[in-house]
Image (cartoon, rainbow, N blue to C red; front, side):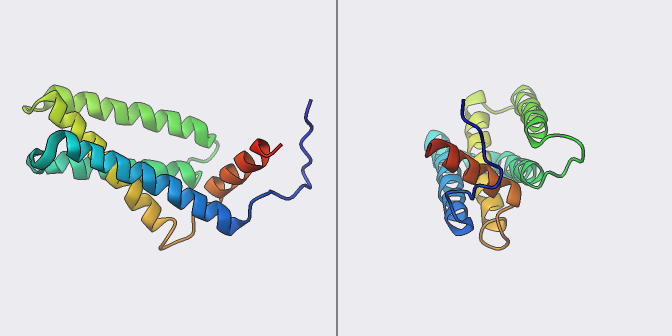
Length: 146
């Protein structure tokens, strides 16, 4: 059984953790945005409000989870609740929209990518990456190096 030494220093510096977060999240965001565009092409402009709206929802959701903004609730629980809400939004969009399900899902995927990119640019380039996220990355690094 591995005991965790609370006085042990993480194996990764803050700068290294920040760089890892930036690389990972920007790759996820760019991948989502590009895949959504690859699926729908210029038809995404027909559902631009869905792309923008879902991008905003995603960016806000990630910020809420990373900033531990819900007092008394573990960030993982907040993330699960946010996932359920976002899934409900997607289901509502598919039900209420007059366009094809494929186009709505492509718009949601692109919006997700744009939201992740926007959040990471704001909290990674303009402002510092939230401490919660850096701690998680550093913990994962130290546990995987054992």
